[in-house]
Image 1 (cartoon, helix red, strand yellow):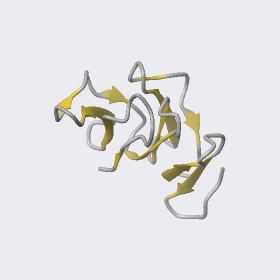
Image 2: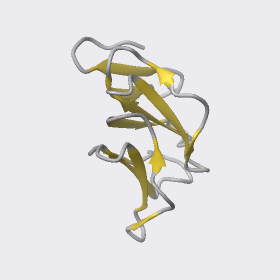
Image 3: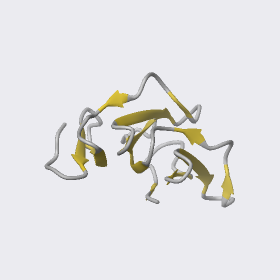
Image 4: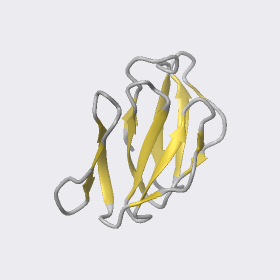
Amino acid sequence: MLLILPAASAFANDAYVVNRASNTVSVFDTRSNQVVGSPIPVGELPEAIAITPDGRRAYVTSALGSSISVIDTQANQVVGAPIVDTGLPDGIAITPDGKTAYVTPSSATASR
């Protein structure tokens, strides 16, 4: 389980947590310590989450799904089709300008 909090946005009180066993992401309101809505379905075996600097998108790597799901944090739902990444995506980081995501596969070097 990996927990990521958005840095500076209207949603800075929400925390996104991967649920590896159920292939979902849960959203928690950190003020009330309550789950917000239903778990969000993502690819198989979610590993990591990165939130864009503006807090509008959460990118979730799914190693066995060989994909990256994009969550709209205002609606708390996946938008569009998953991004296919055949390198078994593991870790992910978003640049401070929000324009580039760096993804590390589970057994190689980073790509973008």
